Image 1 (cartoon, rainbow, N blue to C red):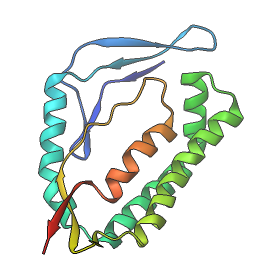
Image 2 (cartoon, helix red, strand yellow):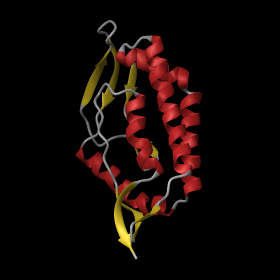
Image 3 (tube, rainbow, N blue to C red):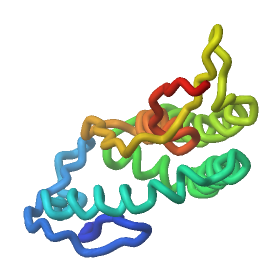
Amino acid sequence: MKTIESVFVNGQFRKPHGTQVVKIMSPLDGEEIAQITYADEQDTLLAIEAAEAALPAFAASTKAERIAYLNRISVEIESRIDDLINATILEYGAPNERAQWANLIAATTFANQAKLLEDYAFTKQVNESTVVMEPIGIAALFTPWNAVARINSYQSCCCHSRGLYRDTQAK
């Protein structure tokens, strides 16, 4: 049985402040397959602080750096595809073909976002105004407990490539 007692915050795994431990049950046979320690409000606040601290560097990153980052994520997903397929089967009870499809979509979503970013214009002319896309902050992305990797990739790859923006008019 697997025991998960870490959260990923500020580029590293660490023990969560939270203490609530939950059992993960197999949808295939109802047996306990893992225990996980939940993060709590303090862990969330630490993650928000880390994201806010990372925002200036992200905002200053170049399009080429973001494209490389997205491609690295895609390659890493592909390199661990068998592990991800097995985890999807075990945790969700998905058939092999469905688990493979869902995880390959995650990899291709990041690769496709990198290609889209190549031609993305952060400055656009709209009538007499120049619209400049500027970073404004961070986001918390929530997914259902049974969201496979593809859902998470859909939500996160746009933020990883372009960030959160508001349109500001500049003359």
